[in-house]
Picture 1 (cartoon, each protein chain N blue to C red):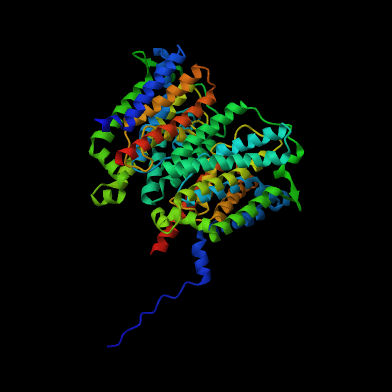
Picture 2 (picture 1 turned 180 degrees about the vertical axis):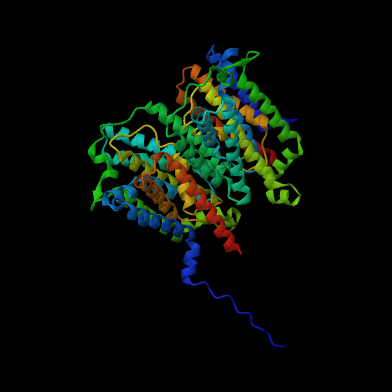
Length: 313
Length: 327
């Protein structure tokens, strides 16, 4: 029983509940349905990418290029629609295809050429952002039709559209990672790649799928982002890679691989978003909240490291 | 029966050993030389004193930060917070200078602050065994948030003229270049010949073996991070003094640019190998490419894409070279 109680996810859940409670006490505007749903809207883009990032970090890899893929996809959406004159739905599909291909390219560089993921995606971070800057020449695209904003600003049954997407994607990701042979293969690769290879797991193909999925989800997040903010710019998503990784790591996924859950990631993201919003509502300036997030990250990881040590000791 | 003596393989010649030890550094150096020759032939103004000075001085602070980063990566760790740290250093230095403290205090107090912060980070990493990327991700948030809250986005201007150390010149060459060259040479000698330098390689190569050989890994990691703080502090002062004002932000993704310089310079992300000379050469290479694109009339918007392609090409070439070396 104590073993379950002392899991990182449990600590995190308690921390999240505690934070929600405290923030609700501090500001009466925090714990309202409309505010919470709106916060869900704001965390959807990072959340989608974090799902794929969880898989990647569980395999012992990392992807620093997700923010750049988001920026590139957003730019391509504008170019396909405005400059090439494609109908918007087709432009969106084509842009998502390109974003997915960017993720696939990451996977190829990592699996075929055995480049460490940190370096490979450090390179593609610069390349994809560079393509976005070069193609757009710093021009932004505006004037999207009204119906397109449904994705980023609309509601279904009173819940923001992208929160539905994030919810469904989270369930799918949790099932794949927690309950399928593929999920077990992902953990096996992260725990010991060589052993996984010898036990017949198709390591390279699994990794290729995961990095491609990261490209796809970053691209999807790009379309949602453009729909929410109604404009396209080449610097969209700059620095998001570190925000995403912070959420995943706060969620208890080990940066060395082999350990981590989607529930943990979801909790990590909720805690970060709640802190950002709740502290802002209680009068802390926007940038002070970043400081708190940094402290919480270190404290949470420290706590679970200490508990781990006591358990084994 | 006659015993046949198997001839021992001839010891590798000095030249060959040099090439295999410094392979990546040589590649980067050749790339720099090739760019100078080609772009200089197309547009001779590329080789003017002014341009060469600005090429070497422009990225000096990145090169100096990359020296410390290389040491950290060689020890098997990483630091993603260095960009924010440089911004914090610059702001502290500027604030002290504007408030009328003696110039030397405005230079040295921020550097001591950087050393202290990073030594604390190193201690946290060494004794709690929390991965360095996690601790420094947290530090990134803390420093970045602290910086923006403290400055509220305001720039610091009206800096006293004596404060601008990066703009001082000796024999027509900006002081930043002297700092870059001197610190690189000192750090290279230190890494190669001092006990502590070797301990850094040992800890990054094989921690348990290093411990067995009498190296104290915890102290080494703290020392590496403190040294890294020293270099980041100097880089921050040069960054603070290279313009007439201090902006409240650093270039986006600065930490990743610094890490990229280390990696392109041949430091293995897995720890244990690489030199600080390579990372300085790589930082210079970035600056050369930047300038070359302008002189070749390539739109500045494509700069980052070219840099990305270059990183990938260098890494792939390095992988191919290593595979050949294994054969």
